[in-house]
Amino acid sequence: MSVTTTLCIAAASIVSSDGNVQSDWSPQVYNAIKWTAPNQGQLTIDYTSNEGISRVPIAYHGGVDMDASGEITDKNILAFKQWVEQQIPQNYCGPIVLDYEQPWWKELRAQSILPERLHEILSVYIQGMDIAKQTRPDAQWGYWGIPGLRHTTARWREYFYL
Image (cartoon, rainbow, N blue to C red; front, side, top):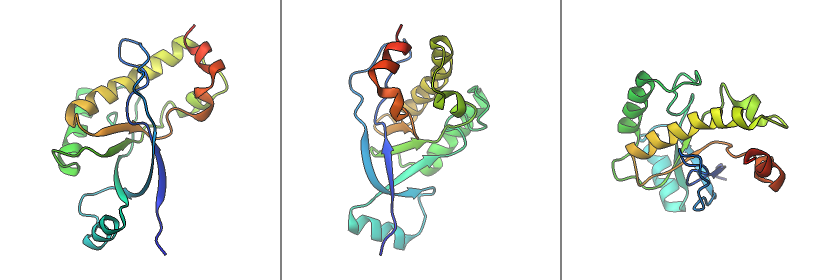
């Protein structure tokens, strides 16, 4: 019996850096094996390839903000680009997950958040997405767990876009 992990990955940004809503956002559900290194084992690669199971690379510990400080520095960008160069093939066009939970997770999971604060937090996510897209423009970049399900309701969107 094989063990796989199901991931829901946003394949594009919801909000662009100028604050406009993107209409091309289309979440994808992948039946995937977590991929933390391109050489995770030839047997795993052969098995997943034969079974049609995606291997999904995940940038842990903040994605671009690799120290999860809430600020993307030049040092973070350099470290992230090195990770991409080492882990992701140049012509890769599949999904890549940015795992960025701290320091924002508690606020983003709250029942309410002031629109100004949400914009402040999301600006860091958007900055990270822009940097990621520059490194591998054909990849399907997305954040783990963003958006939360309750953050897609009409009430939440109205609150956010006041």
